[in-house]
Length: 161
Image (cartoon, rainbow, N blue to C red):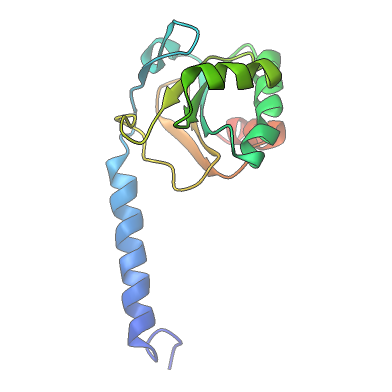
């Protein structure tokens, strides 16, 4: 007798988890769009980035792993001509406070603020921070990371696609 067949509650929980995972996956478009105003007064349009790898990184000022990964993402973008990034500050802080934070933790890529009441349309709400999507040059989602990324993990994801 298998472990699953001996426990109907375990079978039901596994079934629910698979259903939720499939539903969440189905909600994310194959080629998402993203059009946001950045904190520096510009606009970031994911569609305009076609031909480049794009890192879409959800983070927050209060998130220690987010703060730790920011320099790695910034160095990775600066050292790869074919890579762009957008940081999505998933934070209810005042924009001025986020700008002040970025003076202490500068990055080479633009930052936009995303709040719970104004979610980004084509990206799933992050279940944890940091959360990162790697978008391939053709606009498709190549990889989804939950937890910190490094230059090595980003490079491996790009090389693996």
